[in-house]
Image (spheres, one colour):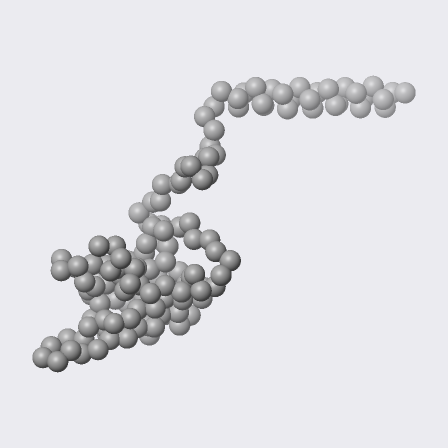
Length: 145
């Protein structure tokens, strides 16, 4: 019979402790967000997928040197360019990023000497299809205009 009262006392103490914590935390501002209607502010140092940077003319700074492609340990970058007649420089025609294999290491951004790449602040990527994570960054850059 002595164990019954001990269990009753221990349970009551536990209940009072829990209610005290609830009472203490109740007036504080909640930490959670109402997800679909509110979103988290992304910090400057957030590493999303890479994206091309526009120059003053509205085109990419990329000169198709291929350093980002060679620096990528997961081989998720493929780019192509052509040299127009009468021009000294190549022009970027395609920049494909396969985000399904990207490890977000940043080697591509570090290896680019022409400030053509940066990390995006896009964080809410969700899909059930693999094809939705293969980005043509040149088309995305043109669509930003």
